[in-house]
Image (cartoon, rainbow, N blue to C red; front, side, top):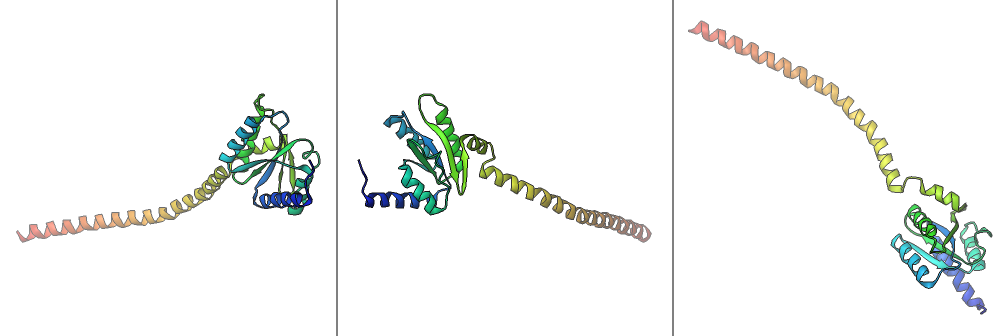
Length: 189
């Protein structure tokens, strides 16, 4: 069934709107999947702040071009669906790869588009081995905190030395005063 020119423009505009908000797009082939399987994939991705949409390839390529993203012909051939990732890209890729490993799903991860870069399925799998954003942030905070802790310790050491010296001197002074006081009492008695 042919799509009217107006409907095509609406589809392209819809793709553009979604692409402008996305962290990346993971392209999958859904050949052989039934409606229940598609619904399960959509539900799983919704949990990860991603949207799974069956695309019209030619119109989707136009939208990719319009937002400045790569539109590789090999990824957008055949019955494909796009996973628009709004949340953590790595978690969504992992979820799709896990779903693709299930022989019953018929889902095939073809690749992904992140900005102007195109990744095949193996490269996407390598991306999942990188630490998550939260892990990277924790590592950076750790790297920053370690030298700061060392500096604070070094700065406190002289102060501890001064405090120790003052304490020792004051203790000795008190002992000397106590000795003079005791001597004065003995002489007065």
